[in-house]
Amino acid sequence: MNKLIILCVALILVQGVNGQRFMSKNAYVKFYSYTPLEKIEAVNNTAACVIDVATGNVELSALNTSFQFKKALMQQHFNENYMESSKFPKARFKGKIIDMSKVSFDKPGTYKVDVAGELNMHGVSKPVTVPAVLTVKDNTTIMGEAKFNIKPVDYEVKIPSLVKDNIAKEIEVTCKAELKKV
Image 1 (spheres, rainbow, N blue to C red):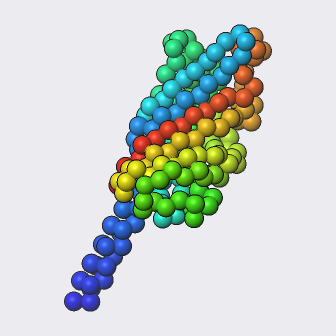
Image 2 (cartoon, rainbow, N blue to C red; image 1 turned 135 degrees about the horizontal axis):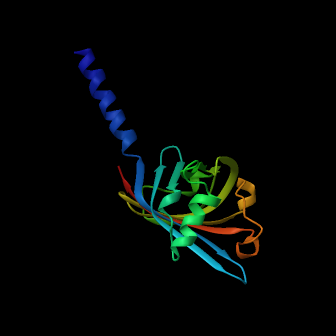
């Protein structure tokens, strides 16, 4: 009988923990580079994103080969020459919402937060703090948005001198996700 009670309590706790996670398998990640010579933009609509509202932990992972460019040759160069996608297949952010007390996940509203963590790209991890906006739609849906800049040089992405003036020194990254309770 005691084992049955312990098992029931354990199942309720596990269900409660799972109920505090929100996930998207089709998060949007865009990067944008602008120079007077060229505008480069790529979009990935298949990134995975998870927010644990109990702990504030946030993770986002995007396959490099899923970024779509307007020109096929740009996509090929991005994967083969710059990101070396066969060697470093994904970019990943793992962090935590800094001030969880700013967010009330149990009622609709829009909350500005900072998320601090590590961005791993091209085999290099760097600490970053990203401003984000969380919009709690209801108890089953959260919208997340963030925009920040990265420098390819910080992640040891080598830009050939022939095209160095075509690629911005800082790349704007935009992330958006509609996360559903799991």
